[in-house]
Length: 315
Picture 1 (tube, rainbow, N blue to C red):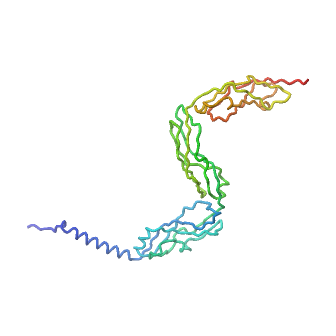
Picture 2: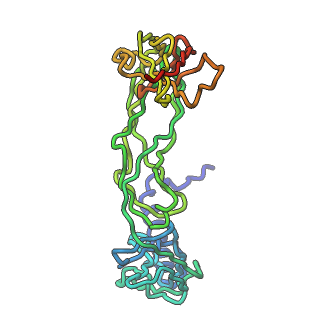
Picture 3: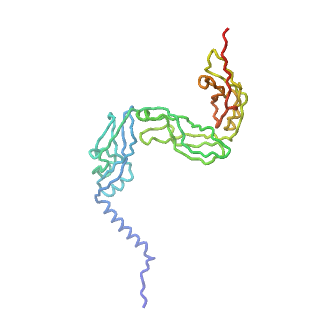
């Protein structure tokens, strides 16, 4: 004897319809009940006096407990909700209790919900300071491994400085702005990289622009010898004749090939400070080598000089 089972394939639409209807009825019953629902909302500040600014960064949220029907609480997730504090005329130190001010919660009033309580924070502290604006130089943060035979001769930020708006206390402690840090492994040619400004971890501040372009001037390492640079003796007594031997010297430099290509004897000064290096019985002295050239290594050849010191006879 064969038992014929119902053919669900023929009736699956009706079965699914009944199941969907049952779910909708259950859902509507649930959504019409009253629930308590807690969410985190941002704390925002309004009407801050133009000459004041936050001293410290405030990235706080408030845990707000709502009371209402399930459907309205569900709709609440699709609206912008925030806790707003009015700071008009506020002193430099403000402390108050958010649970005492449920009216500061902004939410759509057309929803049938109400604020039951503020669960946290129990206390909110805001410190203000005099607002200042100042341009500060940018210092790029980087680690670079130079490839063999090449040298990093210059790092230039564009722009070289950024406008910083922040509390007066901040500017008493800093005189430059740093960027994020990046590492570069043996780059083969000059390159430009975008760096974000590293924001202060302690103070609240705004930066304009918020990022800079940093150019790394990488050049082939080269050597050059600049010939016959005159030796100058300074701070010598008026009644003495001082003659350096030799009176000129060669300068050996090592650095980027483009920089070295434009160097000449006018870019260097060989100076012997007589009062500093000489005393009776001393004849051979070292000289100071001065230059504004951005080079890796520099030395005079010869490294020491002989001083002939003679007293000038008066007639």
